[in-house]
Image 1 (spheres, rainbow, N blue to C red):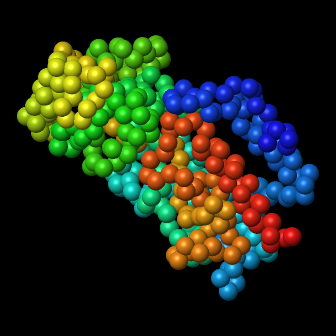
Image 2: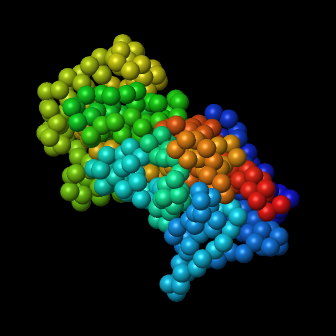
Image 3: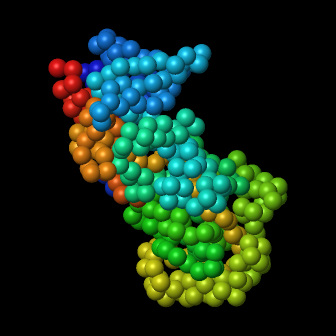
Length: 376
């Protein structure tokens, strides 16, 4: 990469949330100016042609071999491109609600989610590959995202880790109690802090509804700045109560979201007993995160999905070749980056910093090296 002009700032760290220092930061913290622009320039120097504002719409397939594609430019002109190999690199399906349902999200979860990915990431590569006979990996793809409270807005700054609504924000910081539509706990709420900050979302996706219970002490412990405090105040004052609500008893919290009040009170009583004994007898939450929630005011917040990207969707092999339903390569067709990612199953290893970017870059290199046989 450096030989082609890519610039790094020399910082190699754990992304603020990982196990190892494996994240190499681009200069000026900008992939656009320090990676994309120099790589584009290097490609153009080697004869590549870029056509912006031109959307690929379908692949040309002759006798089972991909031989080009059709595209539409910004003026509506249809372009036929003849090629000996095509590499799909459209960024996955993260902004396509219908495909997110196919990937495993419930329709109501998709309806309430927020996204950090580009709105153009709508599954173009996936759809073209499937139409060409590609094998579907979408139900095993990793939905890379975090939990968030819709009324609090969203944290859009890397590494999505604000104290209010980032990956390890208020409801994901391990101190809250999480309950499902039955007012019962369903997982160790500290997983994001102790194992993988992307793991909690996967647990929530198994529920019809998920809620976080916390008190004033937990909220104050987030050390919110004045802007975040105002966000909380405005959310409690102005939102319609479908996202966050406060009351002086667990029963009131339950009734507001039509949960079983008796069950929620029992859930919280049992949890507080675990905190007193220093051992979580249900899910083994780490002891440092066992803090009793006993003194009001209490809060309940509906947990919604903050989708960053979806890793994968198209079955590929180690050469980034797209596979058919018999797991054989479709001649002339490749999928790279998030379109063809096969490193993860269902949960992204957020605790290994930089792996998605490394895969994006290396899979593109693999595909180019493999496709070279068509133009040798």
